[in-house]
Length: 353
Ligand code: COI
Image (cartoon, rainbow, N blue to C red; front, side, top):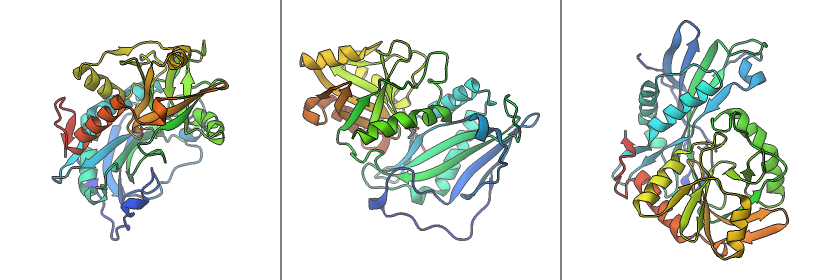
């Protein structure tokens, strides 16, 4: 399929690098492709970023048939543009599609469209440290219909946003609230898919935690309320006496691409990494015994974020004196180094545009 390019006459003013937050500004263009039953995916096009027309009865507004991905493009010092394991995002988006009955798309084709879009938008990729061009592919159900069934029409879109750090703390440790009232997902539900509704359901807990001074919540399993799952926008890792432990993918946890990369990286460095069930009690006991050396989260938006404080019921523990730990720093330097082209890509993770 040929990708049409509809050029705009006036380009936007780009934000100053010092003003970059997360996801506030959008570039000049976006990619769109439609789906209709019987026609498959069709009409791929790069068009000016602008409002889209959609009927109020579109199914996405009523039943949240929508999913998305988060990726980043990095500008290297030699002027290359790097993507980090983008084929995994395409694969995961199709897995999310499968879970909420959205028709699959050709991942290779959409990745080629993303590359084309980024090529056009390359001047939007910020170059300051810890900045990138965030890529948000997403799909919405557009059928104007109020019965509950899969939509017969969809729109796949890719928008771009120059970003800095996701957390206001940047690379400094964040404080996390262990959520004991609300739950995120159950096995058999949609917790392991990147669907929009997961995030809507998480906002109330996040707002309550924020009011108490925490950046995000750490979710526990929904059945026994004792096993650690994930943080709002990242997977979680614990360093207990030198062993790195992360909850195993149980069916209710998002299979993070950064999570997968960190596990591979650490194993290669000779660390013992355990993907297993871990209770919140084990974490707090390790802290009481002086064995909890580090806690950190991983995600595309969050990158590698040290956790400096954890609150569970009425106990607040401080980890590594609320400072970034050695392993976390090693991972941060290497993963971001690979992404930015300053560290050798020995795992073949980079796709250069
Ligand atoms: C990402 O890390 O890219 C995500 O999709 C998390 C997002 C909800 C901010």
